[in-house]
Amino acid sequence: MARKLTPEQMELQALAEQQRELEERSRQQTKEQRRLAQRKMEQGTVMPPLSRVQETNRIREYEFLATRGHLKNQRRQQGRSFLLLVLLTCASASMIWWGLQIMKL
Image 1 (spheres, helix red, strand yellow):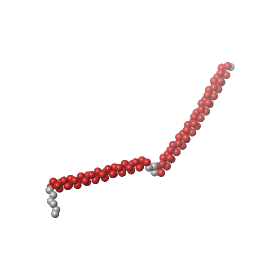
Image 2 (tube, rainbow, N blue to C red):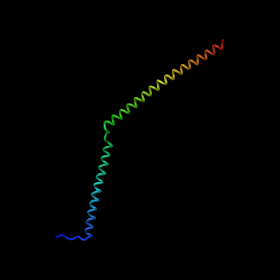
Image 3 (cartoon, rainbow, N blue to C red):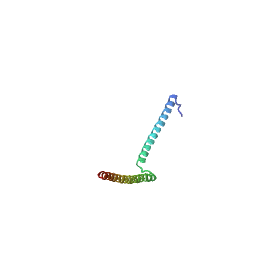
Image 4 (spheres, helix red, strand yellow):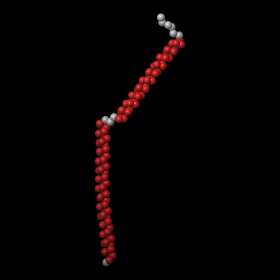
């Protein structure tokens, strides 16, 4: 025999069912958050793709070579500047010497 439920009992059953659904959703959401946190941790510890590693190494090598080339150019330029300074000093010294020789006459 089926017992007839009163409206209050039916409402209580509906509320209990809603509560169970909400608890189940809450458990699923907690599981999903844990799974996402675990995934994020794994991604942090996993090495980047090989192509990215190769690209980073290539850029680092290029910058090293470019810097070395720049240093070579700087040294070459300083060497030229020093040579011009020596020539200018010699020219000035010879002009002074020439002027002193003319004054002695």
